[in-house]
Image (cartoon, rainbow, N blue to C red; front, side):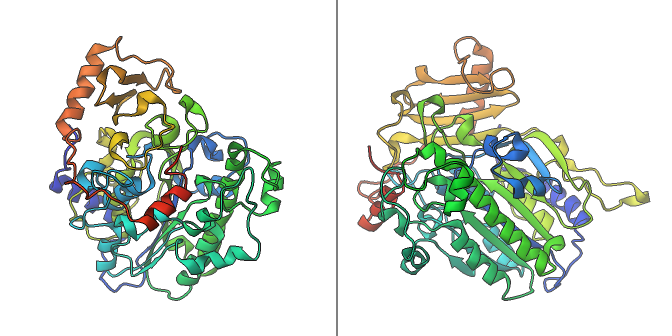
Length: 479
């Protein structure tokens, strides 16, 4: 059953990892590790080099993987930016943290009662700053709580960087309105690097990069040329995807170089994760929001502080983006008493010796995790009418072992069941052929309470005109 993790077990797991992190620290210890959380918007795992892609998109991440734990089976809770980020920042599933749609007849803001990575680390003495690149990761969705500095990419002055050399307006690229709602990754990273340079105190920085989401703010011509993409806008959106990922990867490299130059890299926990992927035409859909692997399977790398063992490994266990909340707190040596649905990630073996010199085992390795994601399509004001007709439903995903259920709550006959081991591209629906598996996963889903959706009273789902303009410019509205 998916339920709140037992608080005692959570504390035990935290305590074991805190030993590895030198957690016997006071609140003012300047040697506490820094934490850099990088979230890559709309980035498919199968477009990353260390996940097997040969397109040359991610040389920086591929090098980082050589000193990180790489998770091969990481799942997001949503194909929507604010919903997925709320799960990362709280360790909770959408039906728990309250942000379930972009906008609409159910709640879209993160509930203020939930601790976040920002609030916990700020209260623990870390200097906190967030640098986000687009409206869907902004204050509108309750994601700013706990950040002493919250630098959003939707302020008017942030467009100045692009006015001297505006992107093309025809063909491949979108219109000027999109610039108002986002900024390019180099502008976001510039601000993050400046902030990091203002103090040597232990920090928690969240940097959100939006470049792969859409081709509005195109990479420099040199990057487009590297991938053979015409700068005149005559290409396709799919052609823009790889150069945008490459450009984002280069900005991540700038962040890591800034830490190296300041001497703080070795004492910084670096987490790189995607919020969700992108359809790119698979299953008849180019964008995100749905619950197929191309949208929900995400890349995840964790680099720990210098001396952690193992330095690098590939972990094949099923993990979730909600597991980042307790994992980051544990690796940072922060308050371990926060109750969460997430569990400390497996593969982070404790290097500190226990009694008698033996290593303390990683208790998370014994976990059996179940992934959950949702897409409440009819209840979200900004679900695209272009979605495949059968997907216009309240969709709920459960992944247990190799089996993946996508339950269509409005029209159950359209539900889907896949064996990801035998059918990783989800081409063979086993809903009718595997009744025992189907019923087991349905029972697990019903037990979560996720199928109960609290609809707002009349009128509360309305969106103000400025929010609507920004969402329309980013492709969340329209035919």
